[in-house]
Structure formats: structure tokens, C-alpha cells
Image (cartoon, rainbow, N blue to C red; front, side, top):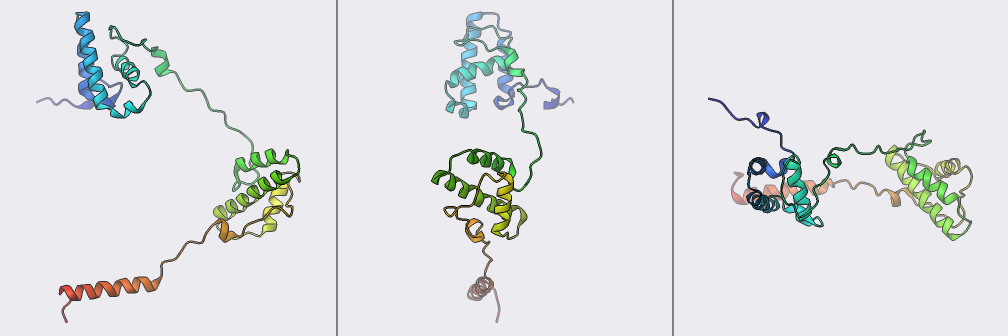
Length: 215
């Protein structure tokens, strides 16, 4: 007896439609009559839409289905599609490389975005807006410090770090308020031992009423 394993079958271009759809597409490629082939393709499109309802949320989902049909048929299906047949190369082209900023980060726990924000705010003119943005930055720095180092930190340390990162361009003016640590990172509430003993006692009383505990 021979067994038909999926690993031995033809690879499916879009597995989400299943093996049966792949077989149907392979079959209509063998239909010689063009009219019959077009009718069979429309039937498969209807089936594909029912099997993949999520695609209905995509704009112009019918166009998407016809593109998928071409992909499943390995672009070898000669039919009268209501949409232009997509270029095969577009499905297999490699994504463009993403450029990442290089260079060392002075304080890892603050991250590169904080440095970018500091540089942006430092270029602004003195005034309420600059004070407000500086307040947001310094408090976010303090929150990041506490979160990553899991320890308290003096405001002087954060102010010194801000001075270094901004190269002296940002200052803590009277309009800049540094929040307390508990305001930035609320302490984790510990479960009360009293609550545990109360629950334990309640469960014990319940067991007695039900007769689970013998006197």
C-alpha cells in the first residue's frame, strides 16, 4: 500500500486556499474549450472568495482573487480575466533593504529616539513650547531610566544626562517640572495576605457546609 503524503505532493502557491482549489486550477488548465475554461475559472473565483472571507475586507477584493488565481496557476492559465494579469516578477522581487541609523547610542536606556527628539527641540526658539517639550522629554528620560535600571534615580542625574545629550542646549527652567517616580511608574500592588487567609477560611466554611470536611 502506498500513502499520499502532503510532503510528496506539488507545492501550493497559496496554501490558505487548500489542496482542492489547487487541483481545480490545475484541472482547468487542461480544458481545451476557452468558453468552458472561463466558466470554470469564475466558479473557482467564487469558491476562493468563500474560503478566504478575510479578503473581502480588502478594497477591490475581486481583483485580488483573480490575481491569486493567476498565482495558483503559476501564470499559465489562458482565460479572459476581467483584470490585467499581474506581472510574475512582482510576486518574487526581493524587498528593498531598510536603512538603519548607525552609530553608538550614548545612553542605551534612553534610546535613539530620545536623542532625535532632543536635537529637534533644541533648535526651537525659547518660549513656552520649548519648555513644555523639554518637560516631556526629561520626564520620559526619568521613566526610561527607572524602567530599565529598576532603581530610583535623582533628578540631578537626569538633568545631567539631558545636558550631555543636548550639548547644553536644553535647560531645566522654572516652567519644567520633573515628576516623582511614583507618578511615572506606579508601584506594583502586592496581594494582601489578609485576603488570602480570608479566602482560605471561606473555602473551609464552604467545604464544611457541603460535608466535605468531617467533624
